Length: 308
Ligand code: CP
Image 1: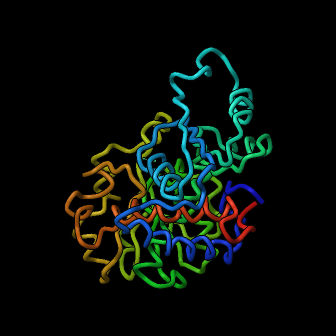
Image 2: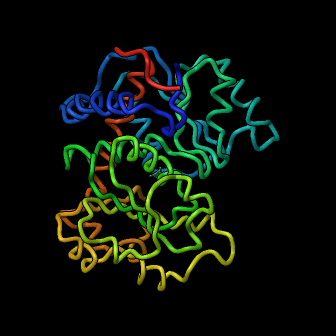
Image 3: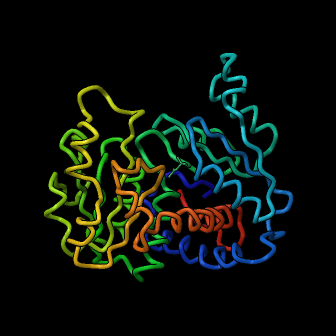
């Protein structure tokens, strides 16, 4: 077991092991000197073939706190531009003996493909529309920190479910831990196979608001849209935008979440994104702790058996 590729078949006890390991990692982040010698001499390579602010920086920060050395492939300036294949690229990197490779790629299954080729551990930092497992784990950590358990909690995932690897990973993880998940979005942005996911699906956000413990707004993935699928921004925000009025109608101190980056005024009203109920920045902080935990476990920092 060397990789973290997806969350769909990750047992609940392994999810919980990662989340429990993240707690002391978060405490380390608050120290005056945020540096451990744990993985001195280990190397972590970041391969981001798609844009990223949070995930990439978070992995780099996590690896550095744990004492590992990090390298990032500058994809735009790499020999991929000279026609080198992905496989040859990773074999070249493999020859430099990394211990862990973190990959984000536009193709679903890219991380799994690399994991078979590489001796190093592979962490999926988002593959196409398939999965974003570390995002779901940091989301779970944030929910558990605020709510205790997610079991029996009503959690709305709202928006562009079709293109969202964050939604897919969250659905598998939340279902596994016993949450009541409701997927809400316009008909054109729900995937055709959604019934097989085994959770409630609806077009009507307003009906689902009462009693919700968490509202997670998802980013409208404008870069992945096919023509005709996307409603106008105005129509979208009227029907699915998270506004102060909608938050009030939950009747609870509902947590407001968003994986980022946020299209303010479309997916979520700015005042709500900045409100005391919003944990959007806390998600980012927790992302470092959770990624520290994952690397710690995969690199053999205590418990060998993590994933896949
Ligand atoms: N949530 C997330 O994956 O953000 P980035 O694209 O900035 O990494």
